Image 1: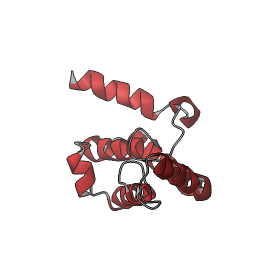
Image 2: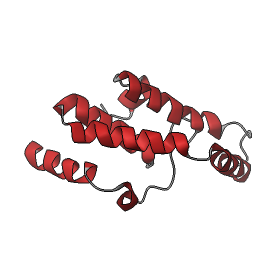
Image 3: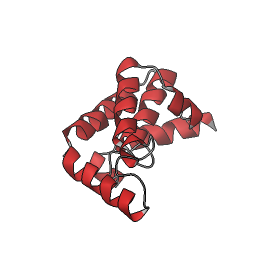
Image 4: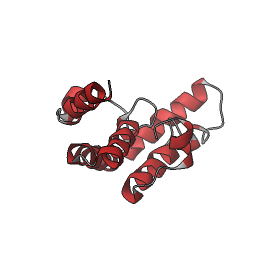
Length: 120
């Protein structure tokens, strides 16, 4: 079973990012969350396909226009009647989670949030 999972994840890691259909840089179901999984797979297996994809996704997240992402967060906060800055600091969907996850990929050490989400 582990061999099958590894082979399938390698296939995913080798796909072009356009095929991922990930539209947000967020941790929850987004680019940086997937990058964290790829980074952890590299740590577990030593397969460079995983770290290469994690780096590619991290670079893409860093190049995205933060203004549109922050504006979307503000709209979501208003819709949910939250404080305007609440979602910016939310780990799963906010900018803070993106930055924390990028740092954990760079350092090669999972942060406590990734541990809680069982990414590690």
